[in-house]
Image 1 (cartoon, one colour):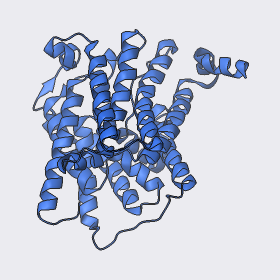
Image 2 (tube, one colour):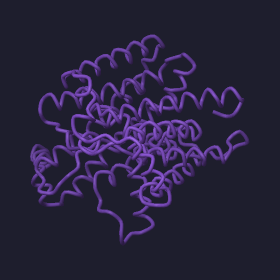
Image 3 (cartoon, rainbow, N blue to C red):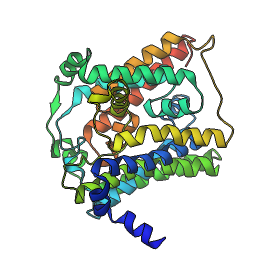
Image 4 (cartoon, rainbow, N blue to C red):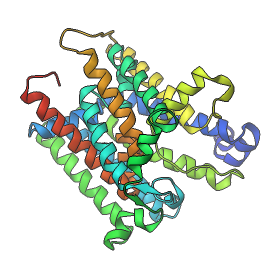
Length: 362
């Protein structure tokens, strides 16, 4: 057993034997299994958290999302303080960003998230539980993402993004902008953790699967950063250091299914996406929650499809979804990631309030 563990921990040997991309894919698959299982059991959902906030309840779904985000912040920030994680070259900090894209894309994603009854990651979780509406919405989301990256929607996306650009480097770091030390991230993580624990106690939300599951969701986001940094440290190839993301991997898998000859190499994202589905499927079957659900009278097809298109375009324009930008970028305190997260919440809240006011399904 110790020899097996030693071989696994010898990452350089694994890279030499199997190649960087397959090791990344395998690592992404393990993280994805844990994420999918934990998110299904804990009912982790940004949309539900926003709705609780709109209703002034701030109950378990809000507390659960905050708990997951706090866990991700604390693990990532601790790794940065210890000098292991260096995300300065990541797309969230090192590359050029777009303020206009983050705000408008985030608003569009938030609107679509309410209309489709779930964000990008939540659609995968729901699909694995038998929700056919999520299957259709998720497929259209992936098609829209691909069209926005390099298809018919790409010119519009590029035009909006160019309205207000920000250079990579210190200008994309929240703490550099406001003149705070980088260690402030740990403090913010503990504040979020305190809020989450307070709301769990206030709403009697001590159910172990939900509590532990939400923490593990956040840990999975951090594990994406740590794994890719670990491999990047010893690899001879340029390996992007990143957290979890679900928008571009959706388009990547769509391309892989439709055009096998020109599909990109397997890597972290390729391993992550299908294993999130498998992890959620295992949890839903084991705990008796798998159930086929289709469209009913109150479930308007156009409602879901419009939302999926808005989410797909918004995700690419903003640089990611609630997890890919909001959490993965938020934990390294990228200003565009925080703008995206705030805009997603605002777009979702406004849409929920509007639909509720006119008696439309929410």
